[in-house]
Length: 225
Image (cartoon, rainbow, N blue to C red; front, top):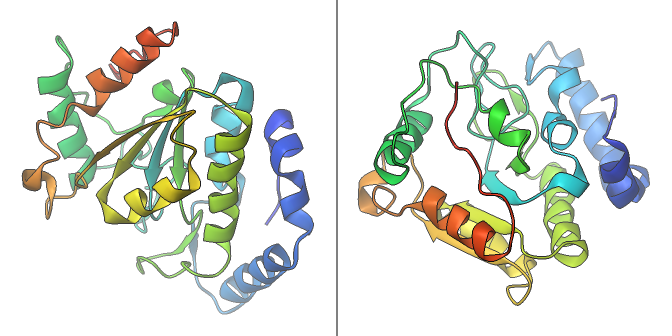
C-alpha cells in the first residue's frame, strides 16, 4: 500500500502511518493479494478522497461505509463510481433527492462525483479498501481506526464543517465530532432498503448550502456535468 497524500493531510495524519495498527493493515492487504484476491479500489486510488479535497479546502464531509466491490466501480470516493460504470442504486437515490432538493438539478448520466470534491466535499469511506465481490471484507482490519482519526482531526483542527451522516453506521460517528464547532445533518441511508424511511425529503444538499452561506462561505454547486 503506497501512500501518496496531499501535503496538508500528510501533516495532519502523517503520524498514523507509523503506528502498529497501520503495519498490521499493510500486512493484511499484502496477504490478501498474495492469496490471489483482487482489491478495490486500485492502489493509486485508495487515498483519492484526500488528494481530491485538500485539508485547507475542506467544507463538507459525506461519510460512506465501504468501497464498491464490483469491477471498475470504486475509485476512492464514497458513493461515487467512475464514468462509464452503471450508477449504483444508492447513488440513483441521491440523484433523485437532489432533483427535488436543488432547483434545476438535472440527473447526470454517470456517477462520478469528482466535481464535488473540487469544491471542498470530502467523500470519505470508513474502510478504504474491499475484496472484490465481498462487501465488508476489509472492515475491522484497521481502516476504521484511521478514518475515525481523520474525523477527530477534522473536528479538532477545523471549524464550521458540515458532516452529512446517512444511516446508523455513519451516525454513530457523530460522537467523534465537536458539535459546538461543527454541523451535523442526519437521515436514513439512501440505499433502496431505507431511502423511503426518511432519506427522500430530508433535503441534505440545500440544508448544507444554507449552513455554508450562514457561515459566510460559498455554497456547493451540486450539479454534476
